Image (cartoon, rainbow, N blue to C red):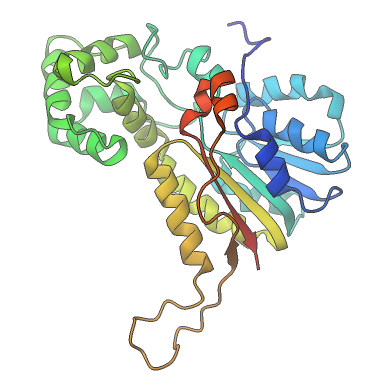
Length: 314
């Protein structure tokens, strides 16, 4: 596989460093290292005065980033870990607090176009969808082993797919003839399940199905929820958490988590005085999410659905 020249543009790079960097000589975590774009932006912005700890579950991504960031040797520490394990990574480095954490929840161009793991519905690739090859179950397992009701529930819950029942029915009918083995084959099945006149204009008909399966295979929402709590707990006071999401499920989860940690009290309404003793640990910097401008979307269509939220440790 040729991986020496991946094509990838990080989303909202200027906005990320502008909100993330509070101390140029600080310690920062790129919790979703990917191709290293955000890490490079952080190092350039601080003139390489900081230390960046880069995490990624994808060992290939780390290998590529090492090459791309070779000029910054000594300023980047690489770890092949899920961002939900950020606490364990920092503990292993004897680092208690950091100055900022960035998590870009989108998939890299490399993963979609070159990983050969079935993330793209345009290619005949094995139906895998694991970000981390150490995970047990693949998309092939889910598509070919779950019941029709289970498939429908996954598509509805994680893809917000209104045609979930029809798609699940078509998947089961197809696999009864022969297992669905590739991403392109699954995409064709989904396209046939949705009436042509209802095919979306701007995205592939299988987009929501692929999103749902990817989320289910990688436990993405559970990992995001776990990550946010751990990340905030490891920020120094005044440190920033920046999260970029790419679909409504992620953004709602991030927004809800930020609001919960910014709320000083969780007592039921109507109580005469606070009994929970809870204090807010986060100040929300972005009341509404930051989104890319027209020029960035024109230069990088992948940025179209990006939403960036920022919180500050208090």
